[in-house]
Amino acid sequence: MATGHIVVAGAGGNTGSHLLPHLARMPGVARITLVDPDVYESANLAVQNIEGADVGERKVAAQAARLRRIRPDLDVTAIQERIENVPRGLLRCDLFVSCLDSKAGRQDLNQLAWRMGTRWIDCGVLGSQNLVRVNAYAPSQESPCLECSWGPGEYAVLEQEYVCGAESGAFPSMASSALGALAASLTAIETAKILRGDADASVVSRQVVLDAEHHVVQVTAERRNPNCRFDHGVWAVEPWISPPEATTLAQAVSALGSVRVEGHRFVSGLVCPGCGRGENGLRLNRPLARCAACNRRMASSGFGARECLDSTLAGEYRGLTLAQVGLRAGDIVSSGQRHRLLLEAA
Ligand SMILES: [Zn+2]
Ligand SMILES: [Zn+2]
Image (cartoon, rainbow, N blue to C red):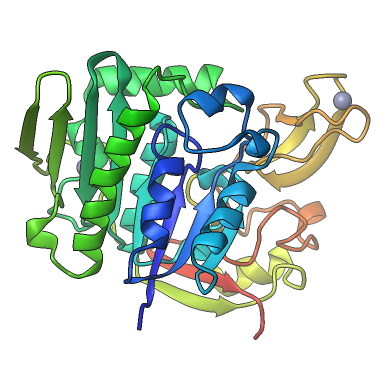
């Protein structure tokens, strides 16, 4: 019986919509979780495996419906959010597949995969040169990660994305539908190998580039870079049953010593970029609340941002619940070297 659970980040880039039907037809796959924040636009019709009726639909919803039509017994979960904002514990799976265009999103997925100790596949296309690329990674201290091959140029692009792409994230790519489908097929074949445990025959710790312009395939072994900026830590995560709606910050700090959610900071002092309205309150800076007056996304005023909450927490915040500051069931809360998965009572 199939048991494999795959999390696919990016349902609508150059490859995602072409890849998903292949995954649904794979005998080893029992469950697919789709993560994508966007809605299909008419421009997507030219390059993605979608139909006119999908325009205006949420990408994850359109793809989930399609997967269920292909295989009614498939367990499909659709999460309309940027992958970096989804509580890590909701994404426990056997394999991550990235069809993301943005470097920031791929960097986050790399970190997520390492923390959870879960293999991940990354694919991409370069339309101007008819190139497709597939990489796979098996998290450990010794094995190469996405960032091992990054130099200053990659980090500069990343900075650029953080500055300009806060909401949209990705750069448009002029790849054809056919090239996206080629990358998707190659990715699906590697997915099947990894799921059946045949990592040696797969692209794990390697990169395959298929140059469809000149009919050349190039395979490169990736190496662990000792100077990689990412720490390569794989976490042992323990469950912590404590509903976020019923646990105060004072209780959490006293039970754990300190509370940190990797990839996010706690901010106090929010300001609306639209109308300038200010709001006090402590929040995890994962999509911040919207302005009550004009509905724009609030921004941190820049004062009072902190990595973790501990015993120095101001008295006015101690009675707030974890849910009130933006934590959700499925979040992984770290204190020192320990990592706990925040769970509701069963
Ligand atoms: Zn690395
Ligand atoms: Zn406002």
